[in-house]
Length: 175
Image (cartoon, rainbow, N blue to C red):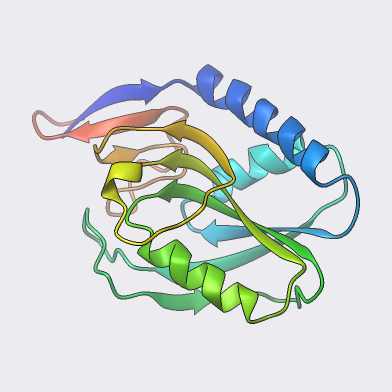
């Protein structure tokens, strides 16, 4: 496998600062819960939370639809639930990548049943042409082509999460 840089660390950090400013403007008051989708979004969450200049609560959820392969299995399951109630709160789902929309459409439905004030989505990456289910992503870092990407929290078989850039994983010589 070979890695080709798609988004550099500097490009990512610049965009996250812009997203943080937009989120600050959109949520001037009230409880804001950042719900990080594990494992891939943890790096994005850390940087986004620091780019938001207001109080936030941080929660984690584990949702799986991939297993160990490159394509979604289509079967969604909660592997780790929230630790605290989000009733009456503004919920911002923090996701690494929106692909088929299967996982996020399920998650939005689950969270809305918990009676929050609002539910929105912030995603570092969006692949709109892969969408199987409609999902409204309020805050998008980058729209990217339909290529398998790793780095900046995204993995392939639990590898590559620690890369500072987002890279396309290509078939070929060893990375």
